[in-house]
Amino acid sequence: MQILEVKSEKEKALFLDMVDLIYKDDKHYVRPLDIEIENIFNPKTNSFHSHGKAIRWILQDEKGKTIGRVAAFIDEKKAFTFDQPTGGMGFFECINNKEASNLLIDTCRNWLVENGMEAMDGPINFGENDNFWGLLIYGFTHPAVGMNYNPPYYQEFFESYGFNTYFEQVSNHLDLSKPLPERFSKIAEWVAKKDGYRFEHFKLKELEKYSKDFQNIYNNAWQFHENFSPMDDITVQESLAKMKDFLDERFIWFGYVNNDPAAFMVCIPDVNQIIKHMHGKTNLWAKLIFAYHRWKGSINRLRVVIMGVKPAYQKLGLESALIISAQKEVQKTNHYKEVELSWVGDFNPKMRALHESTGATLGKKHITYRCLFTDTKEFKRSTIIARDTKDRVAGSW
Image 1 (cartoon, rainbow, N blue to C red):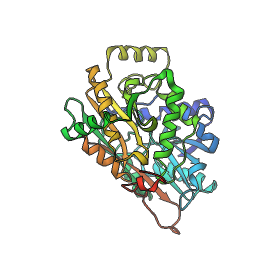
Image 2 (tube, rainbow, N blue to C red; image 1 turned 180 degrees about the vertical axis):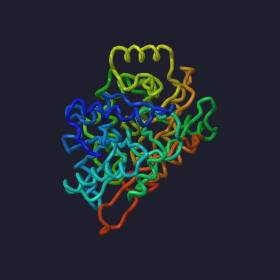
Image 3 (cartoon, rainbow, N blue to C red; image 1 turned 120 degrees about the vertical axis):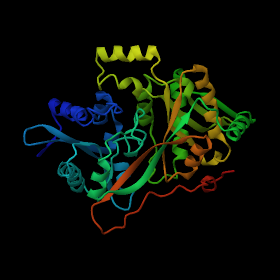
Image 4 (cartoon, rainbow, N blue to C red; image 1 turned 90 degrees about the vertical axis):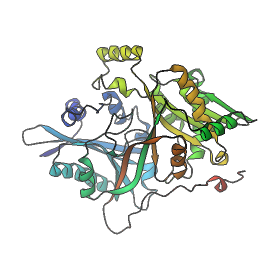
């Protein structure tokens, strides 16, 4: 077997097409758009290259057949904020062969060591954690857009290599044919009508305003997350640009308290229900397929990608009001059947409790693993976010 760094156009194609070998008989798998994957490794389209670097490889057998792939990356904003400098690996695909798997992971490890890292997380993305993050270990059903999907045997590969659970990610499913719990609805309706509170959905024509509000809320709400790194203007714009072709303004909501941006929720149609017919391509034929299925109304699922509330406004029910505001818009369409709330880590008990309060049920579990390269430091799981961060904000009320 030999490892080849991906450099040429031919090698890029082999990297992308590797998934066809792994998932040829899997009816649930959805191949991501090739351009989306390529954009991650393109410094012109992924701002993470301005403060980090990425590399990728393919693995071929003795006959020159591609039997695996993997990528490694270093986000310099976060790498040195842990007890040990920590890089990442992802986009792992491999035939059911432990020797091949170990060779792929070893290649990532060796490159990371050469670049000063002492640990690696995986499988993760070279970008924000809303896309391609974690290894699927439960719920091998149709993946929502941006969510990792993999064969069950990958779990043994990672754990036998020496990866340990850094945090567990849960995605819950909400049946839209059923009403929200009465207690939840009453609280949400009461909050939505409170004096000084305002809830409105995103409007593309006011993109600049909502981008700033999103950044304002995100950077305040995530400040107590472990190894937090503020989101800049470019990252916000890139995130919205990725969704612009399929987002629905009515499902992205903002909450304001006395005109101060206080909370947001981003919910998008599960465009994977169309992408699965496009085989990763965006040529003319694929675009016609996309247009046809969109006209046909093939999308009947939604994904809540992210939700956040500034600590100063937590415990006021803003999340409930955002959810019920979006629910009313969804009901008007009369064709969405399910929403996936994905994902929430076990380090965030407050958000897990919110999911449970909506009546959502467990849909999927992913694991973000960490592998320490030496035993000189103790392995630690991700830090649990305190249930009450409100008092930790100066001047909170």
